[in-house]
Each structure stands twice: as structure tokens, then as C-alpha cells.
View 1 (cartoon, one colour):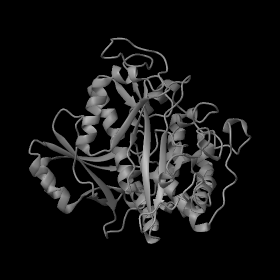
View 2 (cartoon, one colour):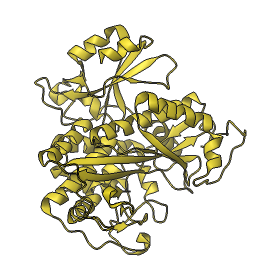
View 3 (cartoon, rainbow, N blue to C red):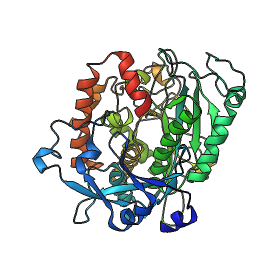
View 4 (cartoon, helix red, strand yellow):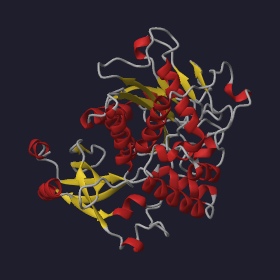
Length: 444
């Protein structure tokens, strides 16, 4: 880590930041000359900081506050080390950190530790998940009373129409995307294909698959931070909120995963199009946990505007082969790359909790040898399927009552997330729709 700073003497400040339950970066700005202290001694701030609400306020009834004396945790750099922050004007670097107790135990309220624990269960079985994320987001002109598509820097025009997979639309924002990809290269984020999507000013960028799911979550978290910061440098906003426009589809965060054994073989591959019994058990685990996990896939009030029938987001608990109306899709293609695509989550999720929930559910199904129902064919919206919770409070109740979630996530994190979401519900219900959008636009 010190090598990075020696090789980059232009770096003037660092940000030491951890991820909270709402995927917000929380931490400190430190002059570069004091960076060694953060690396060698760690840094400290209250454990309650990882359990703030979406506004950054304390959770009123959190036991992490007055009941415990609002005690500190100690935060150490993650294995990622320093990362450039090319969206800022002054040369700066981000140092991702995560929280521990004084005696060295991981703090269970840290979402990065939740994913680490799930991956530890895979390692104990000699298994390694291979993960890729597809992130959708909107470019938005938020300078006026209403949200609009930004004016194209090339044409000077504002096109108010869906532009699905339009090369012209990508080219209208060529300077932004060129700068974004250059920044991804600088930050070592494996950004691959970009397409324009069906929403107004909506785009999708795929992150390449890799066999380090913790790093994949890091990449998704960092990518969201980068896109929002880089958009502001270009004079508009970017947002991963689930649905900023009522009449157009919302943004998802689709997750693809397969699993390797000790010899590097994909345990979902049976040499044909259907996949192995283990794939079916992983699908079954994901389906059984889906209803109870919806709070993680749709963590905010606006999330549920996306989960409506026939709006390119799944609403029923189902799986299928090569069918994008289902919640879980098994893509076609080379059997060696046989994988599961989980399509429920919105772009506004916490990537660490998302991967912990999906991979934890899949492993739970594999361990039990669970058997899924038969895959559907045709339009999932028309098949009378069990529905994913369609409103926020129902999802919170399902998460709280679940017998499955405690098999995946630690009790402290479950408690903290419930407290955080119930406080968000209370205060969001006091705001107008436009005030709600203002909060979500910049945060998620």
C-alpha cells in the first residue's frame, strides 16, 4: 500500500471509507503525509456509523448507540489497497476499510464481512463462486424542476425517447463514456460492454466475471461511486435508483454466477444445455429464499416502483432457461460457461448484501440437495406465480419473519438492517414524491 503512494506522489489526500448497510461510503479524509498511520494502526469510528439511515442520521433505537456507549470499532484496510479517485479535481485516493472489534473479531454489522462469511462456507467445501454483475443506471439532467435526459454534448439536443441498444445514443455521450472507461482502467474495475437501455438516458455496463466474489462486490460498489462522480464532472447526474421515470423501465443489477470445484471445473456444467443436478439445487435455494430476501434486492421505497408486471423486471418467483421474464434465468451458450442469472435486484442495492444473499441461498440449496419446481416457459407475468413482495413494508416483514435469512446472514446485521429500514419507512412516508426522488437520486 505504501508503494502506491510512493509511485503516485501527486496524491494529496486519501479517503479511508467503509461501506454501510445502504452502501454509502462512510469514513475520513486524511492528508497523504498521515496515510502511514491509517495503514499501520488502523482508524477508528463508532460502530453505529455502519448502521445509519439513508440520510446519514443515527438509528433512534439502535443498541449500537447509547445502550453500548456508542463504542468505536477499529477499521483496517481491505486487501484492495489504495484506489485512484479520478472523478475529483485534486489528485486523491480511496482506501477501502472494514470494521473489526478491538479483539480482532469481524464486526457482524459490516456488510463486507457478511459476504466474506458466506464465501468462507464455500471455501470449506472446496468451492469457488465465479461472479459477474450487470449494472444499469440513468444519466439525468436534474438542474430543473423535473428530471430530464441530459442534452447531448455532441448534438446539443435532448432526445426524450427510449433508445434500446442504440449506437447513436452511446456516441452522443462518447466523451463521458471514454472518460468513464479510462477511469475504470485506472481503478482496475473490469468494465466490459456498454449498451443503451430502454429507459430515458439509461445505460448498462457489464463487469467481467471473476473468481473472487468479494472483489466483484468491491468493483460494483466502486463503479457506482465512479459513475456518479464522473457524471457530475460532465455537468449532469448519474443515478442507480430503481425507477426515476414512471413510464419507463427501471434499473436492475443482474448477477451471473457459476461455481468451480477444487480442480477448477464448473459444477453446473453437464456438457449439455440443461446443467447439472447441483445447478438445479442452487436454483431451488435461490427460489426458496427469494420472497424473504426481497428487502435486500429492493431496499428502498422507490425500489418497488420497478417491480411491476411487464416492466422488464421480474415479479414472480420462477426460473427458466433463456427467458428474461423469469426471476432466475439459465442462459444458453457454451456448456463450460453454464451459469445462473439472478434478475430480481434493482440498481439501488448494496452489492455486498446482494451477493451474500444470492450465493448464500444457492449454497443452502446445494447443501440440502433441494429440488426446484419445473422451469417455466413463456411469459412469466401471465402464469399466476407466487409474487415477490410488491411493497416495502411487506418485504421488511418477510425479511424479519424468515427462517431462511438467519442461515445466510448474521443476527446482528439482520437486526441492524431491520432498524435502518423501519426508520427509513417512517421518514419517507412524511415526504412528497419529489422529495423522495431527490434523496434517492444522489444516494443510491
